[in-house]
Length: 203
Image 1 (tube, rainbow, N blue to C red):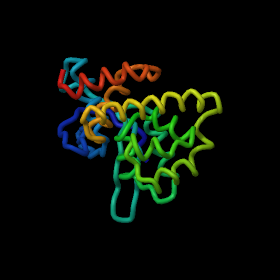
Image 2 (cartoon, rainbow, N blue to C red):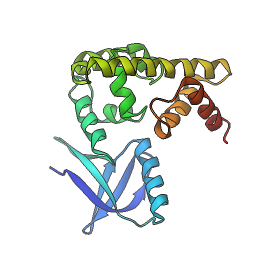
Image 3 (cartoon, helix red, strand yellow):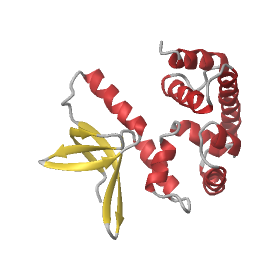
């Protein structure tokens, strides 16, 4: 099985990249977040041709050999953990990872917060219940859960505040997702709302 790939990105599409290494181009399915991270990494390096490393999950079926790529190893670990949930395949797991950060998903699962997963993260109720039922015991200790619960409530309060200002749930969700990616996980609710408004206002 392929565990990692490092090479030059020769094609970038909405849902996948083609990475060339040793003269071979590998089609790697990635989340929208990974695409953004790749762009940010190349911008920081100042080299569009710079090689990029991906951790790889190899999914073999009777009629296909698919690769799923992640820039960070914890994302790969969480992806494979989601695959252990009955009824969740690679495409669904990748879509879930594209909804919010791994840290936020871990907190929601660890606290058994179905309402957060369905409302803020956009996961369907049955899927959320199944994920929590099968993965909760693997998501940290009680102390982490208590801290996470307060943070998740702050995210829900932030979403409600943005909706009260006239933004749709999907707009608010996407803005808060971007805030969580660049801000401290312990940022207070008011700070999250201010940062989300800047994003929504295009500032």
